[in-house]
Image (tube, rainbow, N blue to C red; front, side):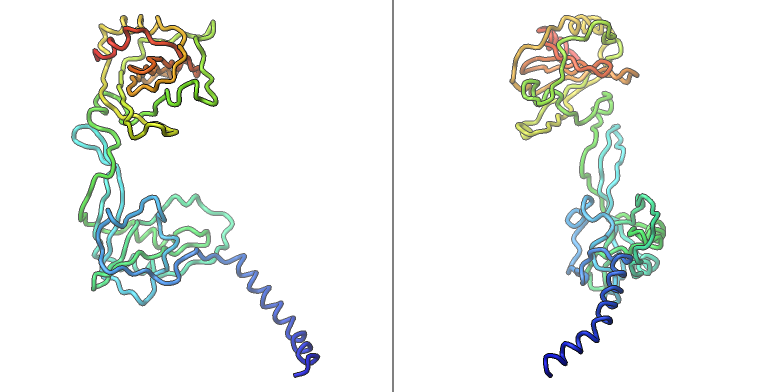
Length: 327
């Protein structure tokens, strides 16, 4: 075909091509399709939630392929984490693996398509379907994608079916101890940030005062009735943020409060020191003014007092460590 003829043919088709591109562009603006796998990922044998569950990953199935007709599930498993109170007063984070035998409603909901992304006013997306996998008669399993609505959120059909599931617990395991029974009984936290890390000399924004300004209310020692001792594990040495572990704690004996008050009041401005303590004590109580005292029991033996939003760094009295060891 001569070049002129070919060019004429292309020009005649150009309006059609441009119209097609415009239509496709318009669809891409109004439609919505999550970045999903093209094909379902089918695994040979289910192991356990401990091996497969990723609670901090794709929480409700944005990325797996939607459930098609090629996979015929006969049962399902749900993985979840929850907090549970323990008989000793502590609290654990527990992983729960449950079986679902009546899967008809949830499977029908999961076979629905994604809706086009057209809504302008949407909710906060706080409702999530359960993290589940489907199993076929051969024991193979997959994690299905969750179809989305016109806001790009899980469709209500899936949410409703998920709420109606009847779960049979298969196994549980403790993932993390949130607070031990001893810490709960003492009124202490299980984990506590090391307020002296990094040291004031290493902080970019220290902002500590050597004493309270004149006219500011003094610390009310009678409110500091809970003493919590923490130790810093060696494995966290040198990290940017250090979290200490509960060691022991409890109520300050009433007959020792006056002595403690005197030792706290006799503190002097902090001396230059970069030695990191391995243990510290937190003195606190729930009060409306938010007053706390943190005392290193080794290392530099400094004391950090928080009074009405001010942070005062001083040197602890030499006898204070002995006093704190008594309770």
